[in-house]
Image (cartoon, rainbow, N blue to C red; front, side, top):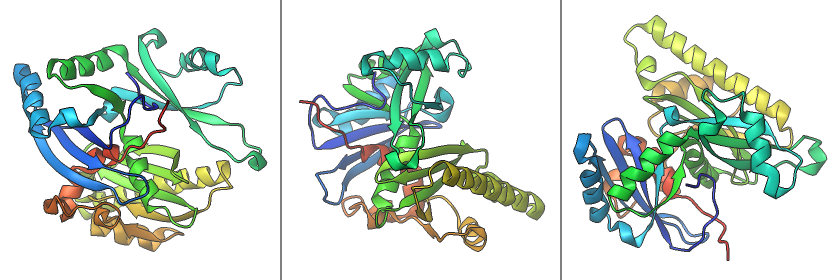
Length: 314
């Protein structure tokens, strides 16, 4: 199963199955060239116990899955995302070299890993050694997901991750060839990314949830805000030292980040901080309920994954 992959066939839309605590969020997106992506539909499917395959199959039929390229997302607990110096080896030896390098970096045995790589582009004049992202998951996790979709009769083409889903949204929001920082918050914590020219350069998990920022106790709430701010600042400072050729124009908060967080970061960041409005970069007219920011937050990673674009391999 592919993570960061190139297409073998061409269709004009993706149907994404993104995990939720009690099921999956489905999003269908059509994206043709440089035109505004069009959201075709969103729905939530409950998956419980022995009936999970049939529930998933019903949801897929409701979205006419056979028409679309289908993908799913792993949850953050299902994989590890590593950053490695790119091995200086021929392409056909790359994965062997990467496997050797990451054997002491995983929390499980490397022989039990399914993994893929994604280059982090650098400018030659920067003098920086090329690096790459490596996403690694246990074989059992990948096998279980494949079997679920096979049992539901769904032709699963790609297994994706939230970091690349967020990258897809961030890439739409970039301005004037400058980098863009994006922060999302969910039940499994925060995710900070930096994109530049549509490529992912930074992905950092932050252990702060919306619940912590909505604490009734003011001291705990402020402590969570301070911790989040510190992690963001450290991450961006480190990024600027590593990638001095990328100038970040602003930070965008994903749907689900509240007004209090927007105000706090705006008062403390050295760059503009704005709230993301997906309707400004995605045509949501066919699914008007997604104009609601809470719904945008609920389906955020499904929408991001559905924005996937690939180089077509002849």
